[in-house]
Amino acid sequence: MRPSEIKEKINRFRILIIGRANAGKTTILKRVCNTKENPQIFNGAGEQIDATVLNASRERGEHDIENEMIFQNNSGFIFHDSRGFEAGGESEYNKVNTFIADRSKKIDIKDRIHTIWYCIPMDQASRAFTQAELKFFSRCDTGSIPVIVIFTKFDALYDVEFARLRKEGKSRTDAKALAPRHAEETFANGTQLKFLYHSKDIRRPPKCHVCLPDMDKDDADCGPLIKLTAGTLDSEVLQQLFVSTQQTNLELCIAYAVER
Ligand SMILES: Nc1nc2c(ncn2[C@@H]2O[C@H](COP(=O)(O)OP(=O)(O)O)[C@@H](O)[C@H]2O)c(=O)[nH]1
Ligand SMILES: [Mg+2]
Image (tube, helix red, strand yellow):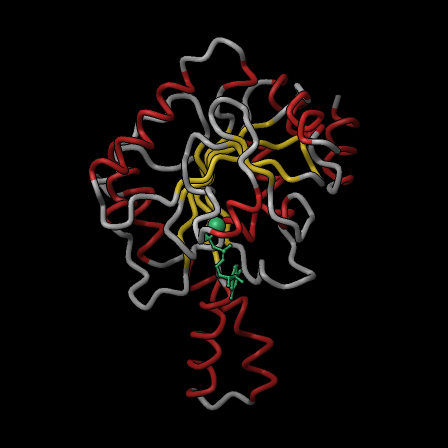
């Protein structure tokens, strides 16, 4: 598809993905669009940003929140990427907040943000919420836009559990087999989720969350994220729009078609 054709497509589902650098955002977007290619990037005025210029700069222009990223492979999605507000910086937070507020005022449904995916990586030593995350979930008014937290790199917790099971004397084979389920249980009963959904400091908790391991692997499965996203949309128009982007997720399309 030529860039002009890509831009012309009207039926699009617009997602804002937020998360610190290296959280695994781009990896998830590629997985969702079933591609290994980098996205095409358009600025706020709809002009394509030159790929040769982008390759020269490390940022590749992905982190201006106004920019639209579209993957040739699945142009039903438009993504906005925010690298979050690493140090809890007020100006970065304001940028995200303003962007969400501005987009919410758009009259045309296609210009609004339809879903927010907030990525929190599990491969960090502390695994505590950062100031940026606290700020977002205590203050950011996302209105009617569903916010889904994605606990990315969840396989890091498998590794932790594997080490623990080995210490308990389990064989390598047993520890490997048990680690994922143990990690999921430990996490489900752990402090992070309790804090996210029940702390009085978190005044605007997400709608739901999903844990995604091994998104960097070839056989990665982003199905749980797709299903959850479809499930959080409250209008039928948006549900249909979302399902129509699911070229790679036939099962979901069929499920909705049957329901209707
Ligand atoms: N172990 C593991 N590594 C991942 C996963 N997802 C992404 N990565 C790696 O994390 C690094 C950063 O990913 P990227 O998508 O570029 O992060 P971004 O900066 O948020 O866009 C890359 O080296 C990925 O291969 C995952 O689910 N598990
Ligand atoms: Mg990225």
